[in-house]
Length: 166
Image (cartoon, rainbow, N blue to C red):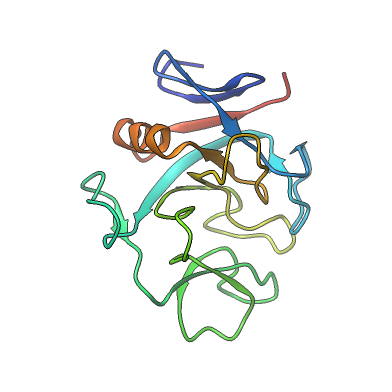
């Protein structure tokens, strides 16, 4: 591990000499992540992209891509686009990326079960804004808004996210 890795610890995520409180999945940590289990998968994930709401914040980095009104994320394990960014209209199960709440105003994408998604192994694991401290996610890692923005300015594609049981 290096200081440039995002490392989940019992106290939060350690990154570049700082500690950031974070929320994990309501299903806890899992060595065998499954679709719909609400767990955060253990292992080494990598940051592979960044999305942001251009109507709510400025582009955080040059490599961040804007979230548009029709942008969705497929979570239908029976569809060929499972665990990929898709656009409306999309007839299969999906999650809206452009939400009414601020949770996805800024999203760091990881390579969990991506790009070659295996059906049933769980769709996207994002780093995104939390609802409030301690409120669990559906499996993602969630942070306070200002902390997420700081992290976003300091990561790059390939930054490792290390999730282990302490």
